[in-house]
Amino acid sequence: MAQVRATDNAAAERSLDAAVKELNFLKMALDEHAIVCVADANQSIVSVNEKFCQISQFDPDDLIGGHFCIGIGDEHTDEFFTEMIDTTRGGSIWHGQLCNRRKDGSVYWTDTSIVPFCDSAGIPDKYVVIRTDITKQKTIEEEIRAKNNEIEQAHREVKEAHSELLQGEKLASIGRLAAGIAHEINTPTQYVSDNTRFLADAFGDLAQLLALYHEVTEVAKGGAVPGNLLTKVSILIEEVDLDFLSEEIPTAIEQALEGVARISEIVLSMKEFSHPGSKNKIPVNLNRAIETTATVSKGEWKYCAELITEFDESLPEVPCLPGEFNQVILNLLVNGAHAIAEKHGEGASQLGSITVRTRRDGDFAEIEISDSGSGIPEDIRSKIFDPFFTTKEVGKGTGQGLSVARSVIVDKHQGTIRVESQIDKGSCFTIRLPLEKSEIEANSNSTSR
Image (cartoon, rainbow, N blue to C red; front, side):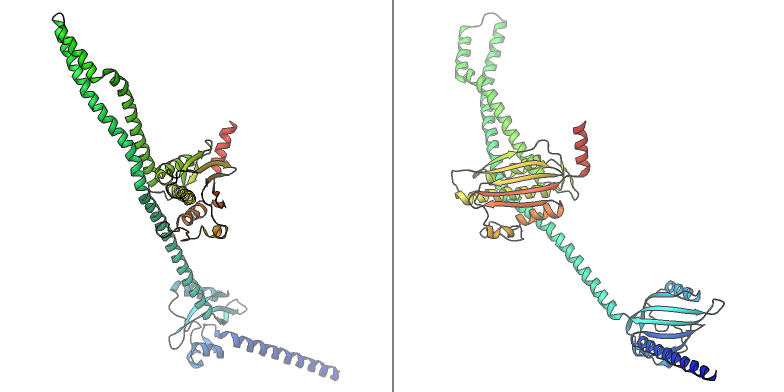
Protein backbone atom coordinates (compact mmCIF):
# COMPACT_ATOMS: atom_id res chain seq x y z
CA MET A 1 0.00 0.00 0.00
CA ALA A 2 2.85 2.36 0.91
CA GLN A 3 4.50 1.55 -2.39
CA VAL A 4 1.27 2.46 -4.24
CA ARG A 5 1.06 5.79 -2.43
CA ALA A 6 4.69 6.51 -3.27
CA THR A 7 4.02 5.77 -6.94
CA ASP A 8 0.95 8.03 -6.91
CA ASN A 9 2.92 10.82 -5.23
CA ALA A 10 5.69 10.52 -7.79
CA ALA A 11 3.16 10.68 -10.62
CA ALA A 12 1.51 13.70 -9.02
CA GLU A 13 4.87 15.46 -8.64
CA ARG A 14 5.71 14.77 -12.26
CA SER A 15 2.32 16.17 -13.33
CA LEU A 16 2.85 19.17 -11.09
CA ASP A 17 6.34 19.77 -12.49
CA ALA A 18 4.97 19.51 -16.02
CA ALA A 19 2.18 21.94 -15.18
CA VAL A 20 4.63 24.38 -13.62
CA LYS A 21 6.93 24.14 -16.63
CA GLU A 22 4.00 24.75 -18.98
CA LEU A 23 2.84 27.64 -16.83
CA ASN A 24 6.33 29.14 -16.83
CA PHE A 25 6.53 28.67 -20.59
CA LEU A 26 3.22 30.44 -21.06
CA LYS A 27 4.31 33.22 -18.68
CA MET A 28 7.58 33.61 -20.59
CA ALA A 29 5.72 33.79 -23.90
CA LEU A 30 3.23 36.28 -22.43
CA ASP A 31 6.02 38.40 -20.92
CA GLU A 32 7.83 38.39 -24.25
CA HIS A 33 4.91 39.78 -26.21
CA ALA A 34 2.50 41.40 -23.75
CA ILE A 35 2.45 44.16 -21.15
CA VAL A 36 0.94 42.64 -18.01
CA CYS A 37 -0.03 43.92 -14.60
CA VAL A 38 -2.14 42.51 -11.79
CA ALA A 39 -4.37 44.72 -9.64
CA ASP A 40 -6.26 44.13 -6.40
CA ALA A 41 -9.95 44.64 -5.66
CA ASN A 42 -9.39 48.41 -5.55
CA GLN A 43 -7.82 48.26 -9.01
CA SER A 44 -4.42 49.17 -7.54
CA ILE A 45 -1.42 47.50 -9.20
CA VAL A 46 0.23 44.79 -7.11
CA SER A 47 2.65 43.41 -9.74
CA VAL A 48 3.94 44.19 -13.21
CA ASN A 49 6.00 42.27 -15.72
CA GLU A 50 9.32 43.43 -17.14
CA LYS A 51 7.74 44.25 -20.54
CA PHE A 52 5.54 46.85 -18.85
CA CYS A 53 8.59 48.58 -17.38
CA GLN A 54 10.57 48.39 -20.63
CA ILE A 55 7.88 50.01 -22.74
CA SER A 56 6.54 52.53 -20.22
CA GLN A 57 10.04 53.50 -18.93
CA PHE A 58 8.62 53.39 -15.38
CA ASP A 59 10.30 51.43 -12.59
CA PRO A 60 8.21 48.80 -10.77
CA ASP A 61 8.16 51.07 -7.70
CA ASP A 62 6.61 53.83 -9.84
CA LEU A 63 3.82 51.52 -10.93
CA ILE A 64 2.99 49.32 -7.94
CA GLY A 65 0.30 50.89 -5.81
CA GLY A 66 -1.01 53.04 -8.63
CA HIS A 67 -4.29 52.54 -10.48
CA PHE A 68 -4.12 50.12 -13.40
CA CYS A 69 -4.95 53.12 -15.69
CA ILE A 70 -1.63 54.72 -14.74
CA GLY A 71 0.11 56.20 -17.78
CA ILE A 72 -3.01 56.36 -19.92
CA GLY A 73 -2.99 59.63 -21.88
CA ASP A 74 -5.55 62.40 -21.77
CA GLU A 75 -6.66 61.67 -25.36
CA HIS A 76 -9.56 59.67 -23.91
CA THR A 77 -12.73 61.29 -22.59
CA ASP A 78 -14.22 61.01 -19.10
CA GLU A 79 -17.07 58.99 -20.58
CA PHE A 80 -14.53 56.55 -21.99
CA PHE A 81 -12.98 55.95 -18.52
CA THR A 82 -16.38 55.73 -16.84
CA GLU A 83 -17.49 53.00 -19.25
CA MET A 84 -14.22 51.09 -18.69
CA ILE A 85 -14.41 51.22 -14.88
CA ASP A 86 -18.14 50.39 -14.73
CA THR A 87 -17.64 47.40 -17.06
CA THR A 88 -14.77 45.89 -15.07
CA ARG A 89 -16.30 46.53 -11.62
CA GLY A 90 -19.43 44.82 -12.88
CA GLY A 91 -17.37 41.69 -13.46
CA SER A 92 -17.22 41.90 -17.28
CA ILE A 93 -14.11 41.82 -19.46
CA TRP A 94 -13.28 45.14 -21.13
CA HIS A 95 -11.56 45.38 -24.53
CA GLY A 96 -10.30 48.50 -26.23
CA GLN A 97 -7.40 50.53 -27.56
CA LEU A 98 -5.57 52.84 -25.18
CA CYS A 99 -3.25 55.74 -25.80
CA ASN A 100 -0.49 55.58 -23.16
CA ARG A 101 2.34 57.92 -22.19
CA ARG A 102 5.81 56.82 -21.23
CA LYS A 103 7.72 58.39 -18.38
CA ASP A 104 9.34 60.84 -20.85
CA GLY A 105 5.89 61.86 -22.17
CA SER A 106 6.10 60.07 -25.52
CA VAL A 107 3.06 58.17 -26.74
CA TYR A 108 2.51 54.50 -27.39
CA TRP A 109 -0.71 52.64 -28.21
CA THR A 110 -1.91 49.32 -26.80
CA ASP A 111 -4.66 46.88 -27.56
CA THR A 112 -5.90 46.22 -24.01
CA SER A 113 -7.97 43.59 -22.21
CA ILE A 114 -8.93 44.01 -18.52
CA VAL A 115 -10.03 40.70 -17.03
CA PRO A 116 -11.74 40.76 -13.59
CA PHE A 117 -11.61 37.66 -11.32
CA CYS A 118 -14.62 37.48 -9.02
CA ASP A 119 -15.17 35.93 -5.59
CA SER A 120 -18.04 33.62 -4.76
CA ALA A 121 -20.35 36.63 -4.47
CA GLY A 122 -19.50 37.74 -8.00
CA ILE A 123 -17.53 40.75 -6.82
CA PRO A 124 -14.14 41.33 -8.50
CA ASP A 125 -11.25 40.81 -6.11
CA LYS A 126 -8.46 40.82 -8.66
CA TYR A 127 -7.80 42.22 -12.14
CA VAL A 128 -5.34 41.12 -14.79
CA VAL A 129 -4.58 43.79 -17.38
CA ILE A 130 -2.99 42.52 -20.61
CA ARG A 131 -1.79 44.99 -23.22
CA THR A 132 -0.25 44.48 -26.65
CA ASP A 133 1.87 47.23 -28.17
CA ILE A 134 0.18 48.37 -31.43
CA THR A 135 2.09 51.62 -31.90
CA LYS A 136 3.51 50.51 -35.26
CA GLN A 137 0.06 49.42 -36.37
CA LYS A 138 -1.44 52.77 -35.36
CA THR A 139 1.39 54.59 -37.13
CA ILE A 140 0.73 52.59 -40.28
CA GLU A 141 -3.01 53.25 -39.93
CA GLU A 142 -2.32 56.97 -39.62
CA GLU A 143 -0.05 56.85 -42.65
CA ILE A 144 -2.73 54.95 -44.60
CA ARG A 145 -5.36 57.45 -43.45
CA ALA A 146 -3.11 60.33 -44.49
CA LYS A 147 -2.47 58.65 -47.85
CA ASN A 148 -6.20 58.06 -48.31
CA ASN A 149 -6.82 61.73 -47.55
CA GLU A 150 -4.15 62.65 -50.09
CA ILE A 151 -5.74 60.30 -52.64
CA GLU A 152 -9.19 61.77 -51.97
CA GLN A 153 -7.78 65.27 -52.29
CA ALA A 154 -6.00 64.28 -55.50
CA HIS A 155 -9.24 62.73 -56.77
CA ARG A 156 -11.10 65.96 -56.02
CA GLU A 157 -8.39 67.95 -57.76
CA VAL A 158 -8.56 65.62 -60.77
CA LYS A 159 -12.34 66.07 -60.93
CA GLU A 160 -11.96 69.83 -60.66
CA ALA A 161 -9.19 69.80 -63.26
CA HIS A 162 -11.33 67.65 -65.55
CA SER A 163 -14.26 70.02 -65.10
CA GLU A 164 -12.01 72.97 -65.90
CA LEU A 165 -10.54 71.05 -68.83
CA LEU A 166 -13.99 70.29 -70.20
CA GLN A 167 -15.04 73.91 -69.81
CA GLY A 168 -11.78 75.05 -71.40
CA GLU A 169 -12.29 72.64 -74.30
CA LYS A 170 -15.81 73.92 -74.73
CA LEU A 171 -14.71 77.57 -74.65
CA ALA A 172 -11.91 76.76 -77.09
CA SER A 173 -14.44 75.08 -79.36
CA ILE A 174 -16.76 78.07 -79.21
CA GLY A 175 -13.83 80.36 -79.99
CA ARG A 176 -12.80 78.15 -82.89
CA LEU A 177 -16.37 78.10 -84.20
CA ALA A 178 -16.92 81.84 -83.80
CA ALA A 179 -15.54 82.79 -87.24
CA GLY A 180 -17.57 80.08 -88.95
CA ILE A 181 -20.72 81.08 -87.10
CA ALA A 182 -20.13 84.74 -88.00
CA HIS A 183 -19.85 83.72 -91.65
CA GLU A 184 -22.97 81.56 -91.42
CA ILE A 185 -24.92 84.47 -89.94
CA ASN A 186 -23.43 86.98 -92.39
CA THR A 187 -24.82 85.18 -95.45
CA PRO A 188 -28.53 85.30 -94.47
CA THR A 189 -27.97 88.78 -92.97
CA GLN A 190 -26.75 90.01 -96.36
CA TYR A 191 -29.76 88.29 -97.91
CA VAL A 192 -32.12 90.14 -95.56
CA SER A 193 -30.26 93.40 -96.08
CA ASP A 194 -30.38 93.23 -99.88
CA ASN A 195 -34.09 92.39 -99.94
CA THR A 196 -34.88 95.08 -97.39
CA ARG A 197 -33.13 97.73 -99.55
CA PHE A 198 -35.10 96.50 -102.55
CA LEU A 199 -38.34 96.75 -100.58
CA ALA A 200 -37.38 100.26 -99.41
CA ASP A 201 -36.77 101.39 -103.03
CA ALA A 202 -39.93 99.65 -104.20
CA PHE A 203 -41.95 101.33 -101.47
CA GLY A 204 -40.62 104.73 -102.63
CA ASP A 205 -41.79 104.03 -106.16
CA LEU A 206 -45.15 102.73 -104.98
CA ALA A 207 -45.55 105.74 -102.72
CA GLN A 208 -45.21 108.06 -105.74
CA LEU A 209 -47.75 106.00 -107.66
CA LEU A 210 -50.15 105.94 -104.71
CA ALA A 211 -49.85 109.71 -104.37
CA LEU A 212 -50.70 110.13 -108.05
CA TYR A 213 -53.64 107.71 -107.69
CA HIS A 214 -54.83 109.85 -104.79
CA GLU A 215 -54.63 112.97 -106.98
CA VAL A 216 -56.61 111.25 -109.73
CA THR A 217 -59.23 110.17 -107.19
CA GLU A 218 -59.64 113.70 -105.89
CA VAL A 219 -59.97 115.11 -109.44
CA ALA A 220 -62.46 112.40 -110.39
CA LYS A 221 -64.71 113.52 -107.55
CA GLY A 222 -65.26 116.85 -109.38
CA GLY A 223 -65.98 115.38 -112.77
CA ALA A 224 -64.01 113.97 -115.69
CA VAL A 225 -60.28 113.25 -115.23
CA PRO A 226 -58.08 115.25 -117.62
CA GLY A 227 -56.26 113.17 -120.21
CA ASN A 228 -52.89 114.61 -119.29
CA LEU A 229 -53.31 113.31 -115.73
CA LEU A 230 -54.12 109.83 -116.94
CA THR A 231 -51.08 110.00 -119.25
CA LYS A 232 -48.98 110.97 -116.23
CA VAL A 233 -50.25 107.88 -114.39
CA SER A 234 -49.41 105.61 -117.32
CA ILE A 235 -45.92 107.05 -117.60
CA LEU A 236 -45.25 106.59 -113.87
CA ILE A 237 -46.56 103.01 -114.02
CA GLU A 238 -43.99 102.29 -116.72
CA GLU A 239 -41.23 104.10 -114.83
CA VAL A 240 -41.72 102.17 -111.59
CA ASP A 241 -42.34 98.96 -113.56
CA LEU A 242 -45.42 98.03 -111.56
CA ASP A 243 -45.69 94.53 -113.03
CA PHE A 244 -42.11 93.80 -111.93
CA LEU A 245 -42.73 95.14 -108.42
CA SER A 246 -45.95 93.16 -108.10
CA GLU A 247 -44.04 89.99 -108.91
CA GLU A 248 -40.82 90.66 -106.99
CA ILE A 249 -42.04 92.24 -103.75
CA PRO A 250 -43.69 89.02 -102.44
CA THR A 251 -40.52 87.10 -103.37
CA ALA A 252 -38.33 89.63 -101.58
CA ILE A 253 -40.50 89.45 -98.47
CA GLU A 254 -40.38 85.63 -98.53
CA GLN A 255 -36.60 85.61 -98.96
CA ALA A 256 -36.12 88.14 -96.16
CA LEU A 257 -38.23 86.03 -93.82
CA GLU A 258 -36.20 82.93 -94.79
CA GLY A 259 -33.00 84.80 -93.97
CA VAL A 260 -34.37 85.90 -90.59
CA ALA A 261 -35.44 82.31 -89.87
CA ARG A 262 -31.96 81.05 -90.76
CA ILE A 263 -30.35 83.60 -88.44
CA SER A 264 -32.78 82.64 -85.70
CA GLU A 265 -31.96 78.95 -86.19
CA ILE A 266 -28.21 79.59 -85.93
CA VAL A 267 -28.57 81.78 -82.83
CA LEU A 268 -30.89 79.28 -81.15
CA SER A 269 -28.50 76.41 -81.93
CA MET A 270 -25.58 78.39 -80.54
CA LYS A 271 -27.60 79.19 -77.42
CA GLU A 272 -28.50 75.53 -76.91
CA PHE A 273 -24.94 74.40 -77.54
CA SER A 274 -23.30 76.90 -75.18
CA HIS A 275 -25.94 76.78 -72.45
CA PRO A 276 -24.37 76.02 -69.03
CA GLY A 277 -24.54 72.28 -68.43
CA SER A 278 -26.66 70.74 -65.71
CA LYS A 279 -24.94 68.88 -62.88
CA ASN A 280 -27.63 66.21 -63.09
CA LYS A 281 -28.69 64.17 -66.08
CA ILE A 282 -31.87 65.27 -67.78
CA PRO A 283 -33.87 63.64 -70.59
CA VAL A 284 -32.35 64.76 -73.90
CA ASN A 285 -33.57 64.43 -77.48
CA LEU A 286 -30.32 63.17 -79.01
CA ASN A 287 -31.44 63.87 -82.58
CA ARG A 288 -32.12 67.52 -81.73
CA ALA A 289 -28.84 67.82 -79.79
CA ILE A 290 -26.88 66.47 -82.77
CA GLU A 291 -28.69 68.80 -85.20
CA THR A 292 -27.88 71.76 -82.94
CA THR A 293 -24.21 70.84 -82.75
CA ALA A 294 -24.03 70.27 -86.51
CA THR A 295 -25.51 73.72 -87.10
CA VAL A 296 -23.00 75.58 -84.91
CA SER A 297 -20.09 73.59 -86.35
CA LYS A 298 -21.10 73.95 -89.99
CA GLY A 299 -18.18 76.28 -90.67
CA GLU A 300 -15.82 73.45 -89.70
CA TRP A 301 -17.15 70.84 -92.13
CA LYS A 302 -19.17 72.40 -94.95
CA TYR A 303 -16.13 73.18 -97.13
CA CYS A 304 -14.79 69.62 -97.03
CA ALA A 305 -17.73 67.33 -96.33
CA GLU A 306 -21.40 66.68 -96.85
CA LEU A 307 -23.24 65.91 -93.62
CA ILE A 308 -25.69 63.01 -93.83
CA THR A 309 -28.06 62.28 -90.96
CA GLU A 310 -30.03 59.07 -90.51
CA PHE A 311 -32.00 59.58 -87.31
CA ASP A 312 -34.25 57.08 -85.60
CA GLU A 313 -37.26 59.32 -84.95
CA SER A 314 -38.67 56.79 -82.48
CA LEU A 315 -35.57 57.02 -80.26
CA PRO A 316 -36.72 57.96 -76.73
CA GLU A 317 -35.15 60.78 -74.76
CA VAL A 318 -31.91 59.68 -73.14
CA PRO A 319 -30.67 60.72 -69.65
CA CYS A 320 -27.68 62.95 -70.40
CA LEU A 321 -25.58 65.90 -69.36
CA PRO A 322 -26.58 67.89 -72.48
CA GLY A 323 -23.69 70.35 -72.56
CA GLU A 324 -21.08 67.63 -72.24
CA PHE A 325 -22.81 65.36 -74.76
CA ASN A 326 -22.86 68.24 -77.27
CA GLN A 327 -19.14 68.69 -76.72
CA VAL A 328 -18.49 65.03 -77.56
CA ILE A 329 -20.49 65.28 -80.80
CA LEU A 330 -18.68 68.50 -81.73
CA ASN A 331 -15.27 66.90 -81.17
CA LEU A 332 -16.16 63.92 -83.35
CA LEU A 333 -17.62 66.07 -86.16
CA VAL A 334 -14.56 68.34 -86.18
CA ASN A 335 -12.19 65.36 -86.10
CA GLY A 336 -14.05 63.83 -89.04
CA ALA A 337 -13.81 67.08 -90.99
CA HIS A 338 -10.08 67.35 -90.28
CA ALA A 339 -9.54 63.73 -91.39
CA ILE A 340 -11.34 64.40 -94.67
CA ALA A 341 -9.37 67.62 -95.25
CA GLU A 342 -6.15 65.72 -94.53
CA LYS A 343 -7.08 63.08 -97.10
CA HIS A 344 -8.12 65.42 -99.94
CA GLY A 345 -5.96 68.42 -99.05
CA GLU A 346 -6.99 71.90 -97.96
CA GLY A 347 -9.29 73.66 -100.43
CA ALA A 348 -9.96 70.55 -102.51
CA SER A 349 -13.10 70.69 -104.65
CA GLN A 350 -14.00 67.09 -103.86
CA LEU A 351 -16.23 66.73 -100.81
CA GLY A 352 -16.08 63.82 -98.41
CA SER A 353 -18.93 62.70 -96.20
CA ILE A 354 -19.74 62.59 -92.51
CA THR A 355 -22.66 60.34 -91.62
CA VAL A 356 -24.45 60.45 -88.27
CA ARG A 357 -26.86 57.67 -87.39
CA THR A 358 -28.96 57.14 -84.27
CA ARG A 359 -30.88 54.05 -83.27
CA ARG A 360 -32.06 52.09 -80.29
CA ASP A 361 -30.37 48.83 -79.40
CA GLY A 362 -32.21 47.18 -76.51
CA ASP A 363 -31.56 49.14 -73.34
CA PHE A 364 -29.12 51.47 -75.10
CA ALA A 365 -29.23 54.42 -77.46
CA GLU A 366 -26.53 54.15 -80.12
CA ILE A 367 -24.92 57.02 -82.03
CA GLU A 368 -22.64 56.26 -84.95
CA ILE A 369 -20.46 58.97 -86.51
CA SER A 370 -18.48 57.88 -89.56
CA ASP A 371 -16.32 59.84 -91.97
CA SER A 372 -14.63 59.17 -95.30
CA GLY A 373 -11.33 60.61 -94.13
CA SER A 374 -7.76 59.37 -93.96
CA GLY A 375 -8.35 56.80 -91.20
CA ILE A 376 -6.34 56.10 -88.03
CA PRO A 377 -3.11 54.04 -88.26
CA GLU A 378 -3.45 50.73 -86.42
CA ASP A 379 -0.40 51.35 -84.22
CA ILE A 380 -1.95 54.42 -82.56
CA ARG A 381 -5.61 53.41 -82.34
CA SER A 382 -5.18 52.23 -78.76
CA LYS A 383 -3.76 55.66 -77.79
CA ILE A 384 -6.30 58.03 -79.31
CA PHE A 385 -8.34 58.31 -76.09
CA ASP A 386 -5.23 59.06 -73.98
CA PRO A 387 -4.96 62.61 -72.60
CA PHE A 388 -2.81 64.98 -74.70
CA PHE A 389 -2.26 62.40 -77.45
CA THR A 390 -2.57 64.01 -80.88
CA THR A 391 -1.18 63.45 -84.36
CA LYS A 392 -1.96 67.03 -85.42
CA GLU A 393 0.74 69.61 -85.83
CA VAL A 394 1.37 72.15 -83.07
CA GLY A 395 -1.43 74.68 -82.84
CA LYS A 396 -4.06 72.46 -84.46
CA GLY A 397 -4.92 70.14 -81.61
CA THR A 398 -4.56 69.86 -77.84
CA GLY A 399 -5.02 66.11 -77.70
CA GLN A 400 -7.98 66.60 -75.35
CA GLY A 401 -10.95 66.09 -77.68
CA LEU A 402 -11.14 62.30 -77.66
CA SER A 403 -9.89 62.07 -74.06
CA VAL A 404 -12.75 64.34 -72.98
CA ALA A 405 -15.16 62.33 -75.14
CA ARG A 406 -14.18 59.08 -73.46
CA SER A 407 -14.40 60.59 -69.97
CA VAL A 408 -17.84 62.06 -70.64
CA ILE A 409 -19.30 58.92 -72.21
CA VAL A 410 -17.69 56.25 -69.99
CA ASP A 411 -17.19 57.94 -66.61
CA LYS A 412 -20.16 60.31 -66.53
CA HIS A 413 -22.76 58.41 -68.55
CA GLN A 414 -21.68 54.80 -67.88
CA GLY A 415 -21.71 54.24 -71.63
CA THR A 416 -19.13 53.04 -74.13
CA ILE A 417 -17.24 54.57 -77.03
CA ARG A 418 -15.23 52.61 -79.58
CA VAL A 419 -13.65 53.23 -82.97
CA GLU A 420 -13.19 51.22 -86.15
CA SER A 421 -10.94 52.58 -88.85
CA GLN A 422 -9.34 51.77 -92.20
CA ILE A 423 -6.52 53.74 -93.75
CA ASP A 424 -7.76 55.98 -96.62
CA LYS A 425 -11.33 54.78 -96.10
CA GLY A 426 -12.26 56.55 -92.89
CA SER A 427 -13.22 56.00 -89.27
CA CYS A 428 -16.42 55.16 -87.43
CA PHE A 429 -17.00 56.08 -83.77
CA THR A 430 -19.84 54.28 -82.01
CA ILE A 431 -21.29 55.65 -78.76
CA ARG A 432 -23.69 53.64 -76.61
CA LEU A 433 -25.63 55.35 -73.82
CA PRO A 434 -27.85 53.49 -71.33
CA LEU A 435 -31.56 54.24 -71.21
CA GLU A 436 -33.19 54.56 -67.80
CA LYS A 437 -35.30 51.57 -66.83
CA SER A 438 -38.33 53.73 -66.07
CA GLU A 439 -38.21 55.25 -69.56
CA ILE A 440 -37.86 51.84 -71.17
CA GLU A 441 -40.87 50.53 -69.27
CA ALA A 442 -42.91 53.65 -70.00
CA ASN A 443 -42.13 53.34 -73.69
CA SER A 444 -43.00 49.63 -73.67
CA ASN A 445 -46.29 50.30 -71.87
CA SER A 446 -47.31 53.04 -74.30
CA THR A 447 -46.46 50.76 -77.23
CA SER A 448 -48.50 47.88 -75.81
CA ARG A 449 -51.48 50.16 -75.31
